[in-house]
Amino acid sequence: MQQNNDEQIEYWNGKAGQTWVNAQERMDLMLAPLSTSAIDTADPKPGERAIDIGCGCGATTLALAERGASVRGLDISAPMLARARERTTGESVVDFVQADAATHPFSPDHQLLFSRFGVMFFADPIAAFANLSTALESGGRMVFMCWQAPAVNPWISIAGRAVQPYLPEIKPADPRAPGPFAFADPEYLEDLISRSGFSDVRLESVTATLHLADDLDAAMRFQGEIGPIARVLAELEGTNREQALAAVREALSDHLSADGIELGAATWMVSANKE
Image (tube, rainbow, N blue to C red; front, top):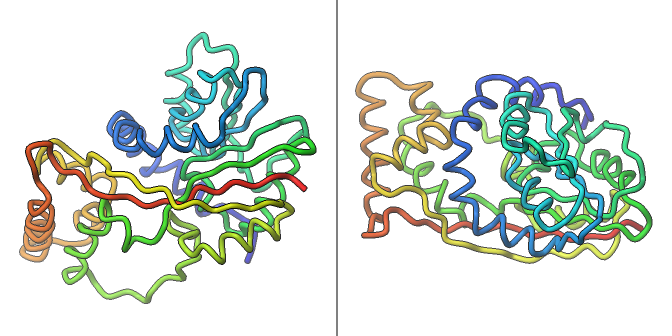
């Protein structure tokens, strides 16, 4: 595989980046249980220097700083970094850099590398993690969270299964290609981290129930921006679109309760040390 991440850079600096900016508050709230778990595992110490890889709109960067760390948020998306900077006025221990973590030149004076769902998009993950390791001092640690397979993530797969019959058939993608679920296979994940120059690699399954929305209309709007419905809106017209949207609505309605729509999520918590 090539290390060139131009496709991802173009994608996250286009419509996708602005879409995530618009959804920032909802995403932060929905992912809060997982974010807290990841921050607790990383356990940043006062005075430590940390890098938040794929920091997006800055929620986890700020959370690391609240624990006392001095944090640099790194991301390729200019729109998302602009939102992150808006949230950090006067925060002296936080700064943000637009850069590709796969190739960015780091200085080996950090104690912690952290990421919440920001490291699954590298064209060449082994080379990228090897480059990331150069940011750590001897004995430094890396902690990141990534998604397990879609099948064990109902928060996204329920709508995905509902729309599938209505979408054009496409050749199955490489499950390890850059994307949210690229690290779903635990054996593959552990191997690539080990081959990248890290030791003591540990994977822990972390699950949570995510509050998708307060009602069906809100759930449909949310997954129309970030989720399988977005593809329906982009690719389908007329009756096919109406039927696909109705199928999603029906599938989600089965999970509506007095608390809204709450669905399960499954992740890998990955911890490793610099050799």
